[in-house]
Image 1 (tube, rainbow, N blue to C red):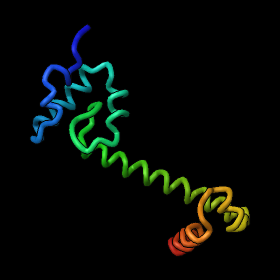
Image 2 (tube, one colour; image 1 turned 30 degrees about the vertical axis):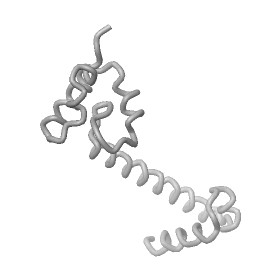
Image 3 (cartoon, rainbow, N blue to C red; image 1 turned 180 degrees about the vertical axis):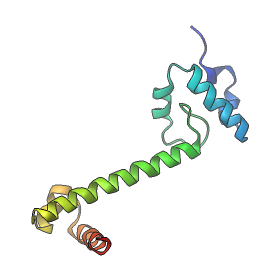
Amino acid sequence: MNALPCEQAPELWFSETALGVEFAKAACIAECPLLNVCAEHGQNEPHGVWGGTSPDDRREAARERRAAAEDELNEQISTLLADKVSVRAMSSILGIPRKTLADRINRLELVS
């Protein structure tokens, strides 16, 4: 079995130069059969190239996931509000404390 790209020169996967990071990312993407597994494993790693992603890539992906989750929650709240569901019932349905939910609803209504 061939060695994984990161096993051939592991120090490159923790390079502190932009060129080193780009080399490691390209090698991962082009050669590694474990790309997706590695990316998932390194999702919260603050250092190194994991699954073809740099720390900056992973931070950006995490921001995008949080924003998508916020948008989804806001959409659920808007739908429940449109259906005239009480804050108490929404709190139970969404698993959010009533005070937190009420604050979020107020922010949503200010934006609308």
